[in-house]
Amino acid sequence: MESAVFLIAGFIIGTFGTLIGAGGGFILVPLLLLFYPQLGPEVTTAISIAVVAVNAISGSVAYARSGRIDYRAGVVFALYTIPGAILGVLTVQYIPQHSFNTIIGFLLVMLATYLFIKNKNNMPLTAPPITKGCREHTLIDSSGTTYHYTYNQVYGNIVSLLVGYISPLLGIGGGIIHVPAMVNWLKFPVHIATATSHFILAVMATASVITHAYKGTYNDPYILHMILFISLGVVPGAQLGALLSHKIKSNVILQVLAACLAIVGIRILLCSF
Picture 1 (cartoon, rainbow, N blue to C red):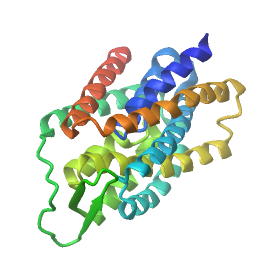
Picture 2 (tube, helix red, strand yellow):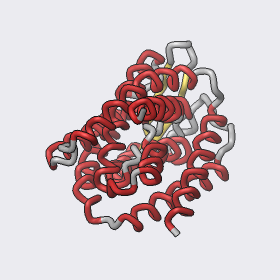
Picture 3 (cartoon, rainbow, N blue to C red):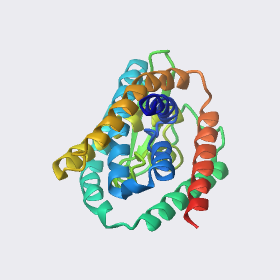
Picture 4 (cartoon, rainbow, N blue to C red):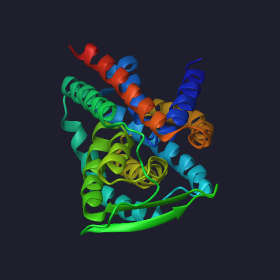
């Protein structure tokens, strides 16, 4: 019975995580905190980041077929996440459970508030004027839609380094930070941001999993059982999420992301006090 619950949870995580480019950790971590508080921060984040890795890899395959991944930006940003990801894995063991829950809750609520305020469907398909430090890029997806935009490479590298550290530290995958940052600060089109963020997550989460495995975090057979069955649900869910992303407007994707963040964040905070 528990295995079936893991499968269903994995499917939901894969669908919504891929739809908004967030990896799904922002759903799984709160669930683990609520129903498996005995695991502790290090094991909770290790389980989540392993599932995020599977979700991100599966979703990236689907997004690659859609032609919406900006590989030029994605590869560089992904490389900048790796040092932070390793450091995050090595740091999480020092965070007390109550502090961990409080940090997660406040982070989710703050991000949700920011997205609700900033969410405007005004993302142009033509690029703004190029300024110093910016790169211009034109991308045509598989449906023939052309995206022309510019982004600041240095700012993107800094954001990626921070996301790399925070993601395994909190087990949330990083997409809930990377996607808003890419859309609102770096000015990527939303659909390109979600797809590229998923590609970056695939690289970063894999590096985090390798670090956790080296530390022996996955030695418990029950932990491996949990990861396996959640991942089996994540893979088809990720394919569905990528498919739905073609049919949903960009502002709706951001609204869904903000609503999910607010609900989960408030729930965790209520359990922390």
